[in-house]
Image: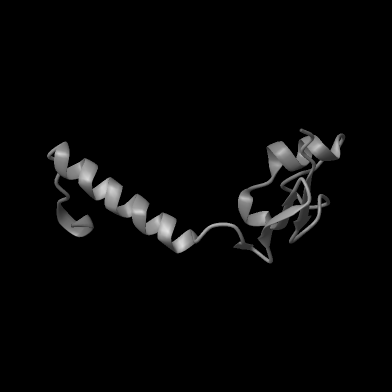
Amino acid sequence: MTIAVTARLRGSLNGAFAAPVHEPVSALVYSMSGSECRTVLVDGQVLMLDGRLTTIDEEAVLERARRAAAELSKRARITRKGAWA
């Protein structure tokens, strides 16, 4: 199976974060953060469109992660104190 990845970016590779650009692919991989990416296609399937995931319910995944973290903290007897409680 061949996987092709295409990304549409908010900015460009001309910004200070990526300069100097000798190899565009390396600049994308090593200099950019996920927040720079707006649209992602993999093997012809749109996985992210205008910054929103299209194949999973992001809020449901985040809620599941929050519950798992809370349960792990409980099992490990970790308690939060102060402003973070």
